[in-house]
Image (cartoon, rainbow, N blue to C red; front, side, top):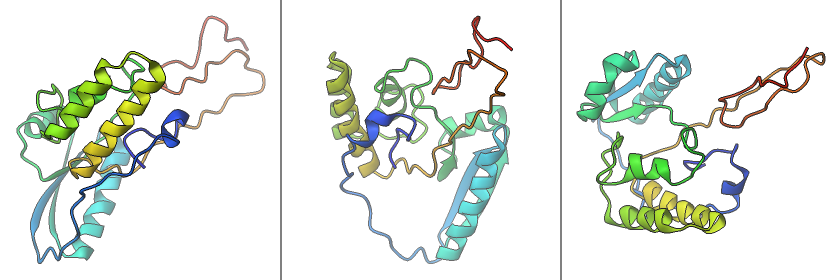
Length: 188
């Protein structure tokens, strides 16, 4: 559920339901091009399952799978109807708002969904202006609901990292951002 996954415990209790999503209709053989990159094999596999589900629903689906380096220029040019992609919403800064600004505003630098929605922009700007961490999270969740209400982004799955550590290893870092597992205090 939502843009922020289950690894962010604070998000679950603050989630607002999106409003304004489109009603399902009969696709009547509508052609769509679905893209995914295979640098992360699970994305190509997810895209294949999604392709089958969409075809069962009545769409005609062309699937494009390439490395991200070969796909990115076409992604940024808007050449696909839908893309199965992965995005760690907290990777770069640990701030719930920074990715909203880059990915979901009219002027966002990495806006692969091409979302340009006045309400989403206004709510993201309000979240960006908030300095209190709890209120900033609340504002980010309101912006998330506005984004999801546009159907520009449809969360499919949140990856769950499972890290095995031998009993003989001490001092590992269990980082929810998956950037660090070993530190200067890690010993065997």
